[in-house]
Length: 142
Image 1 (spheres, rainbow, N blue to C red):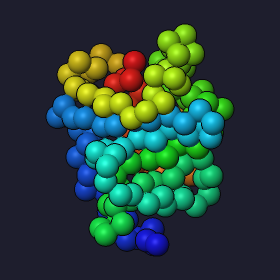
Image 2: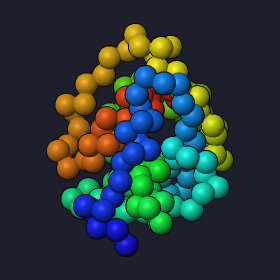
Image 3: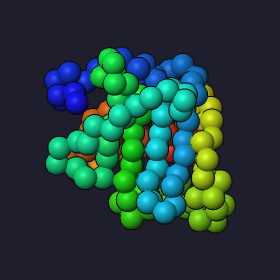
């Protein structure tokens, strides 16, 4: 298992910049877990549980220790309240059922530039990579 200092962020650092990109999302209603992948879900990833936060796991490519996604545990009770746009439609549009299998999400930052989001509402122990990417993921889902 990787040590924190061995984790690489090349993919995630480039995934949420100015270029359009694709990510993959699935929700498991039984475990209340949202999985966000920055690479195709057919690639192997291992979960690296973050210290001090039981609600987020980083998905790592095992050979390189590169972050390739996130596991958001207790999604509806812990994470959804922080996603202002998404929480308004989560149940109305039956998104738990819609995302019961992997869906490809296309994100174009130019289409979503009108929204501004603050990351100040997140606890200090949330991984900075997730806090940075969360508003972008939310906009792409809405």
